[in-house]
Image (cartoon, rainbow, N blue to C red; front, side, top):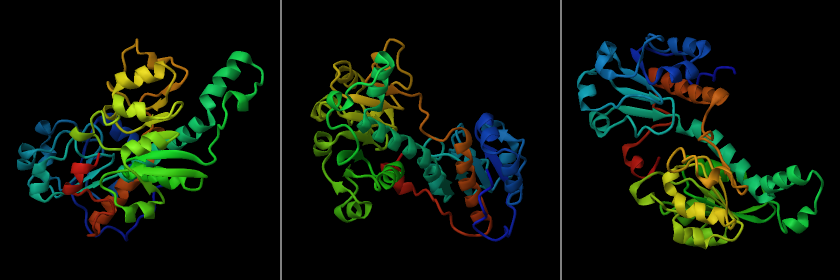
Length: 343
């Protein structure tokens, strides 16, 4: 993959930077070509990757932290030992796990590659939605069993994607990308999000409805709400009962959004289908029927960036570092106030 083109002229200065993430993620996100580009912007030891700020003497001179999954928490004690720190560029999605209120109080500017990470999640989701309406899993299983064409239209009346209704719960980065990718298809798109008004919904090309109405009207429901105390078990037993017989629930957001026991009951009864990339708990017990039900596709949290997709995240982070070194504001800043309603 070619490096992302520089969004700015050559860097005006070279701040001191430090990798803060799990070593394996540094190796995956920053192979030699990307390290070479990074070295053209900042003064950084590419072999020094800290997983524990308490044991990191380089923290004292670092102006910029390049973070990703596995970054230690940046709290008051860490900031006291990092007098030069001014910015954090996160080569991953959410910053909630390591950027603390102390960072915002200090005026640290923060960028995230959440928009880049949203792309593969949205792609997985759209594939799941289109396959669900086409009944690909059901038909594939029957074809393997019978090894002969059957009358699919009789077995699955009305199957397909034309004029089916898809409900998106949450206009997050991923939710908006899903809507964008679904727009060319002949689908009726609904959105439930308490933070979105009619004008914004119209711009997104969706009909804004309450969550209960969305659940009752949709052939496929796709979850993209953040993990917050108020969203825990957002899709509970009562709301699952609102869904149409044969409808599909897709969850690529957070497992805690769904009452797993209630969904399992509906799936075992054959009333609902599900595509679950995240669950609560993250790894279900080995005895869970969700592993083997023909109407459930269970995947191990793979919708996000993996393999070659990681370089999209790296490119986003490097673009942000180039902007910072040239004195420009981040293109993908994280705002403290927005974290209350985001992932």
